[in-house]
Length: 242
Figure: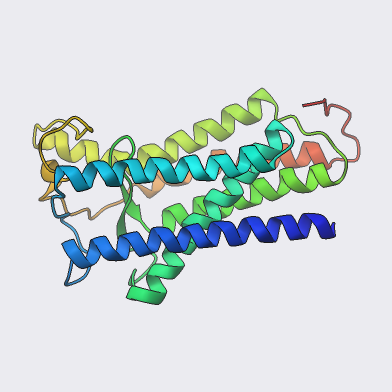
């Protein structure tokens, strides 16, 4: 157990450090594009900067995925470490923004969350809730392996987890698609010659679809509950070699 605690601590420190690096980049970008403080509508970003930012986000995900692939011993453990690191990285990104910029003003402050494949937007509270759920799921998997149980996530659990995630993601990207559809614009892609956010430069989000988000979060938590109940049940005889 002591070895596990040490591993989780180092993984957490790695993720926190990555969260700080993410914050540092965003602070620089905000000083350039939002000297008076970050706000909507979003200011168009030149194509060269936009491409670098897009690729930087992709590189961040690859780095977090790599730490899971290199550290985990089984498929389930690799997946657990990935979502554990991803969630801690995401939470501490906001912790550092609050420390250095005193932003966000509240957990309901809107933010641009991600750029791949299109801009995601939503209140800060939403990704933080998802991150806590991911940490919970990761710890359940890791602790079950610590109890000398080989873990196999069943297809129905994978289905519910994936469905919940997709519904949550749709709650983040639907405001963007609604805006570009209203303006009859096309989505920004790497090959676009126009500036990033040019198509939504007048977009000021006001209402978030919390019902859609909560539906996805409920399905996500259901998958975690079913998995946890099966794994830690004393009468479980269905665990198979991963």
